[in-house]
Amino acid sequence: MKTQLLLPGTDTYALASEILENGGLVAFPTETVYGLGANALDRDAVLSIFAAKGRPADNPLIVHIYDRKQLEPLCEVPEQALPLMDSFWPGPLTILCHRKPAIPDQVTAGLPTVAVRMPSHPVARAMLQACSLPIAAPSANSSGRPSPTTAAHVMEDMDGKIPLIIDGGMCDVGVESTVLDLCHGSPVILRPGGITREMISSVLNCDVAVAGSVLRPLRKNEKALSPGMRYRHYAPRAVVTLVQGPEDRVVPLLQKLCLEQEAQGKKTCVLCFSEHINLLSACHPHDIGSSGSPAEIAHRLFDVLRRLDDEGMEMVFSEVVPPEGVGLAVMNRLGRAASFRTIQA
Ligand code: TXA
Ligand code: MG
Image (cartoon, rainbow, N blue to C red; front, side):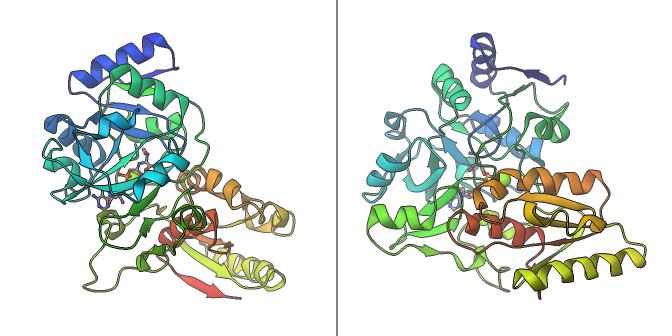
């Protein structure tokens, strides 16, 4: 199959709608990462998403909408979700709702809940409006690779597998949406993202829990609240290790670890804050953004992780940020890239 890469515009949206109505797949930009969309009500179309990504069938998909009215036939919205939708939609917040029968099992992986989100990216909105279908869309990467934040990343993984990629430039947030469960008692963040625990808590006026496996590996026999948490994710081929501690000890330790590995013949680099690039110039430093700006780090992170593979890196040592605000999403993704391997400086 030839994959067309098109800029947004009326003709592109018309073509996207035609493909989606006929059961095909379209990759499109959202404010978080690129999505791989299909008509959420067409089970064969949904199945072809799993095939294109190589995604395990037991990992459910998020349904994307343009207008809240579209939810009516799809799910029951929990009461607590309403003020959150008022505050954060359109935007990077996904909410679990009780599904109705119209949603195929393939979307929810047989779960009684369906994840829904209204993206804010103008291209996603224009496409969703043009086709007026609820669109099931996971991130548009091959399963196991970092989510794509540019059309070029999508092309790397999906060339020849899908008919259309809409190029909307680089995604703003850079990590996937916050996934929030309001269906099983008090609110729990299953996956942290651009809408932070602090933001949700201030709207709901209550504490918001974070699933334990966000900052550590799943324990043996522990049930994943979100099936996606079971899978190896965001991981480059290199062995990644996080280095934690006071700045004046982290930087020299990064340098030491990197040089030791290089001496053993391993292709090695460091992921560090912009402020430390000069200090670590002997260690192939990759700039993850300023230490004071977790949002900037989130924005760049997946592009940096993808480049490690292109460069054939074998060992990678990375700085960390405090797990607060958007920093929690950064540490979840970096932690999983490192299988939560951490050294204390
Ligand atoms: O920002 C995003 O959310 C992007 C863009 C394209 O919207 N999408 C995305 O989808 O990241 P995906 O499929 O890569 O991640 C969806 C996550 C998975 O971890 C999945 O297990 C979880 O949401 N999920 C979906 N439905 C669920 C449900 N009913 N219960 C629990 N977790 C669910
Ligand atoms: Mg994904």
